[in-house]
Image (cartoon, rainbow, N blue to C red; front, side, top):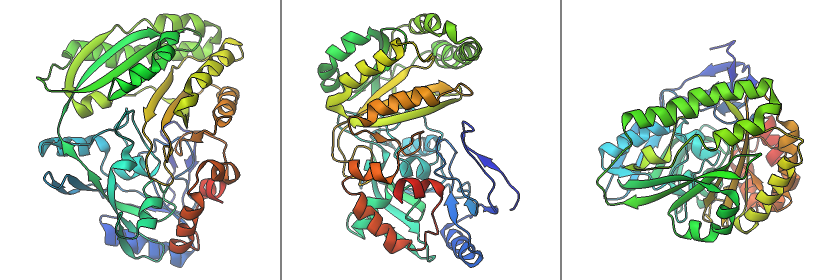
Length: 432
């Protein structure tokens, strides 16, 4: 298909590729890659477009994984499930539940495709369990020469360690084998807490909960905290009315309208945030794990997120609060803070270190450049690593200082894609 435009979820980037294709199986992906090579076109595979960067943009052949959406196998005894690249994470969760298994951890939205989420380093929050890429135990990929390969810790481990969070730079991921565990319930405890108390109690809150995160409302000293822990049951989900009130009406419908007003009248933001930070009351419930991990996010925004060494979090947040209090910015979206243990994925933001994630957002259409620049300076001062799919200005000269295995990953890239068939402008900036 030709003359088709594509854009990210938040309209941060657009693309008009030479042509697009939606191959229905791995062999068709390989044929498409070889066809593009004959035409001298670069190739990128997109997902749901939920990245805010231009990681998937191409002027060549844009592949859509919509027809690569099968769950090939679920093996509860082995603790594995193999899924094709284009299946949305939410649908994968449903299939796993039918087989009595689940992912150990996931992010707070579930609309991304499996490959897109893994390739950009999507994560949730966890004391013992890391992001999606750390749960990958095998990949099926199409390389630049059209060959189909499988990699794992035992089969081409260099490619496996590089390509789990590979940004599509090493090949087109067509299927992923994920580690799964028996299905489980989570007991969710959500309640407001002063920011100063959160920072003072941070070691206790992190150590005492399997999954802890919080949202700080700029221009206030208020947060909303979330503690999720495995529960024996029985399930006690929120009532339909409470779910609609909190997660649909207040968190989406009302929040959308509030942000529209704040975009037009920025001076109202501090007062609005003081009200917003108290709008959601404390709640507790027990439900299926993926229903607790993920929530609906209908309000469009632009986001920057950095992974920083966890030991620097308190100082980083205090400096962020000083920047906001200085009065140069009016920020209507809360700042989200999550955690992850160190992992062994070479290009993961949590590689080799206990990690805190700090995400800053602005409502779509609101100027973000100055706010993000001020925050990025704080994050990079402690060796922060930008989320690959979210706004940042880092290039290879910076990234090679904070990713100790970057050189080894680039050597693998030279081996599997020496002609940069899968390259684009974004990869040139971050990988060289």
